[in-house]
Length: 198
Ligand SMILES: Nc1nc2c(ncn2[C@@H]2O[C@H](COP(=O)(O)OP(=O)(O)O)[C@@H](O)[C@H]2O)c(=O)[nH]1
Ligand SMILES: Nc1ncnc2c1ncn2[C@@H]1O[C@H](COP(=O)(O)OP(=O)(O)O)[C@@H](O)[C@H]1O
Image 1 (cartoon, rainbow, N blue to C red):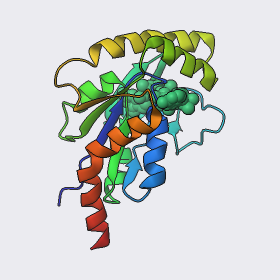
Image 2 (cartoon, rainbow, N blue to C red):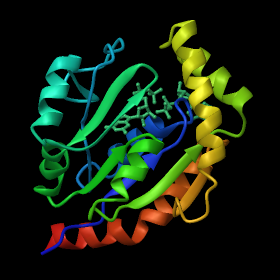
Image 3 (tube, helix red, strand yellow):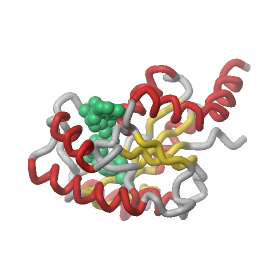
Image 4 (cartoon, rainbow, N blue to C red):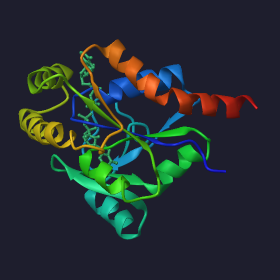
């Protein structure tokens, strides 16, 4: 049996992907499972190894990439990020909808695989709003913030490419954005809930 379709959440750093994902996992904890990526960036305060990310060194990650253990990987803002085969398989083994939070390079590389997810881009209403959200989040140094804003400008432009995403959510009002997200996922959520009931 083929499991439920995975979901890709992409979009600039600070657009609200993790916030929306947390809401989904809170409301449908049994239906969705997060694909825990690997990264070489430092953990933020409150982040737990194995939960938000597998925090690894560049050497460790390169070794696993060379061993063919990754579906995709990319360099973002001076760090490596990647989705291991094991991360996706762990979620699929539970018959859950696998959610991947990946950048645009990841989206392009996932398109070359047979994963066939629903592609969703989460965008902020403007670069100015994005900058304010990132500053208020207080997770980034000034250097890291500027790198993210530069990447965001590129993301905002390239994400409009026709056919790249199934849906672009402009996250202005959080509840509205969440409703849009739930709406596009409704059919898939229902399928999983029915399987779990039977
Ligand atoms: N290609 C790819 N991108 C990833 C992966 N994991 C996270 N990212 C992206 O890396 C970027 C930075 O993520 P992070 O450092 O957590 O910062 P945040 O998005 O500001 O919370 C975001 O655009 C994520 O979507 C991955 O496994 N592969
Ligand atoms: N609609 C919104 N309005 C105001 N602030 C928001 C909204 N959505 C998210 N935020 C805040 O913006 C910051 C960035 O959101 P986050 O989910 O961390 O983004 P991402 O995961 O895309 O990097 C967080 O501090 C979050 O609480």
